[in-house]
Image (cartoon, rainbow, N blue to C red; front, side):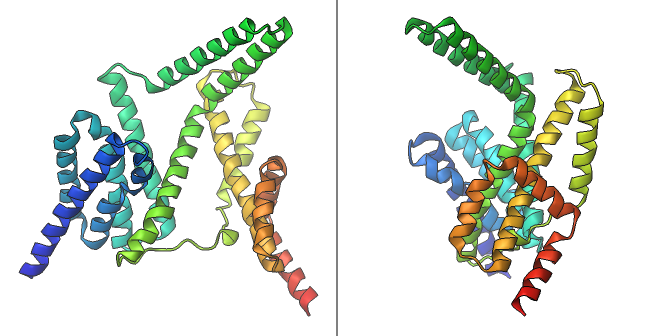
Length: 319
């Protein structure tokens, strides 16, 4: 019992120290930080996967303290992103949750961390990161405009550039919330792809996702899409209002989900037909320029049992 307690404390100290070292490298070592940043959740995730939440929470607190001592206040924002993230991954494994639960929980935790830091930067520091981002884009557009004029751009070219820049900036401003959410979910997905195999190699039993070809979103997603579509078609939404922003961002996220559902159906069909893997790669790439068609396929796949029909047809053909 005493040996287990000693091992638990030793492992906790090692993981907190390892996290601090990885964080320091990620902050202060160029080029190498492009790699180490993807392993930041690993020490906390490993410890939380082996021990209950109370000692894991203590190790997380020690990691914050060591981070502050090693990197100062500037290192804390990164720690506030990756410590809760790793904590969520580890506890999901320790308590036997599914990989989907881990993915959704980790994404929500990371999203909350980002939102909290965004609010703190506005309230305490008076810095609005999103506004600064758009200010930098406007400056970049203005510099490109000056360059176009300097090198003899015609009035028609200048006007076309202005219209394109204004349209792009307007779309970006409207869809920024959805883009942030999508980016965070994609970030979590990449980190899980990298860290879960490593945890498995370190002796941790990690959950698995079912094959992508078998992915089936809840039918509620289809109803949400239809409701948002009806609101956008039947309501005269004024640009810039909260309702316009909510509908636009909800539509973007739902379309992305249905797009993934459509690709999943392509994978399912190729799997049933027994076609080679290179066909899957080609079809996945072609799905992007055929995005609208793929979304329609996703809607049909979600609303009707076409997978059952495909399988029945294939079985009948094989007889």
